[in-house]
Length: 120
Image (cartoon, rainbow, N blue to C red; front, side, top):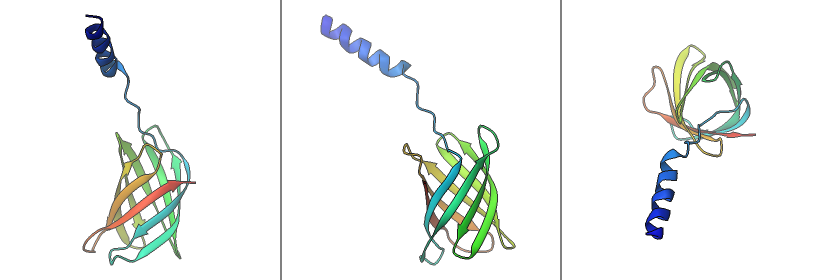
């Protein structure tokens, strides 16, 4: 009976333990990704929080700079951005270590690229 009660208490604790909220922190990130043609690129991104769930983001990769708005929803993080005259979209998964793993696309182009952001 004692073993049963101990197991029941442990099982019950699993259901009342709060889930850890995913967060994206403001600051600088290292960028590593692949272009639509599969070639690699690197750079930096700066995220500035504008509310608990929204932010602004600016990427610098090679000689290109793009900026946009972003939003956190659960463990998903999405950003819409402008690069030259094209509009793009990137969707990331927020990892427990604060890094972001994602895929992106841009208007008028086929396919998608990948991108990882690592907090600096």
